[in-house]
Image (tube, one colour):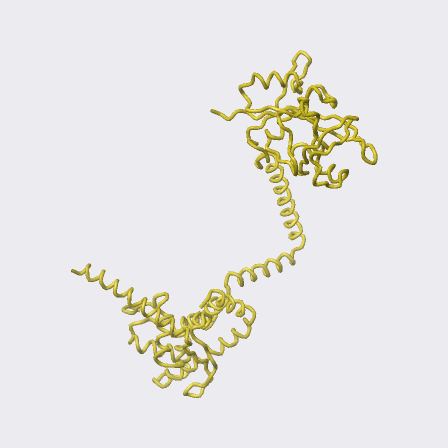
Length: 298
Length: 112
């Protein structure tokens, strides 16, 4: 006997309920007849015999009900009955039905939206290494009325060399660059970043590599890595792009890698350059956005 | 009904299987009469409770039923034990014997 077989028997019983009910009714009638016959033989009057017989059986309706519950899946049948009842009573008062349904819809929608925002901003962990320890670093200049100001590269260097509060700290800014050398020149948006930003955040490249701490210091020549979007649009998704040279602002740059589109940190940049003294694409804004990984609490 | 035991949950299935094994095909009323006869009035059998039990046993494939004609000439549904039912009867008899042996031992200790 397998549970599957029992389930099949019960499902079959749901389908052929009418016939099973009729057969059971006939069976119970036969039971009462046979019992009554015996009671008449024992000396009861026919009417009294039938009354006794019904009593001994325990009520035809109750027995049929118990057998039906045993046969099918009672909670499912009760649920179906409740749903039918609900639909009928809602249909009888459509105004109430519409009001109730609308209130429910508005309530559910509000909850969903609320939770989606809460989840996105408060609950979902950042998809970066030590996401819970990431902070934005700002400077203030009260004398100029600035209480949330960016960080200059000079200040970044000072913080990096003297901090005891951060395991790592990196800056990023934006610049426009011109891509030439292919079919038609394009103006692109570059994210100019501290070379160790992507390693700090644990962002992995789609192919090739992200920047090393040495990039941007001049010895190996300027390097760049591309967004997946730019790589597909302008370089035909070339798998061997790493190591090739591209011309940005009329200077040759070596491509080191490609960053996946959903990397989650700077969605709008077409390519990344390493901030450094030799970089021709200096940040437009003298002040950068700065991200620090604070030291773990001790 | 003083002095009569209610049918324990689970024992009715075993009683029905055993009765069908001994008596061969029976209709519901025949089963009820036979059970009452064997129990010699010691058992308060609400005859109606047989029918959910019969449904349960048939769905599990331990008995099967067919319509026939009773000795008094009335149309009735007859139940018969299947092969699976016979195996189930053996298994349940075995387990019931074990249980009652264990219980007997405990109750003897209590009396001593």
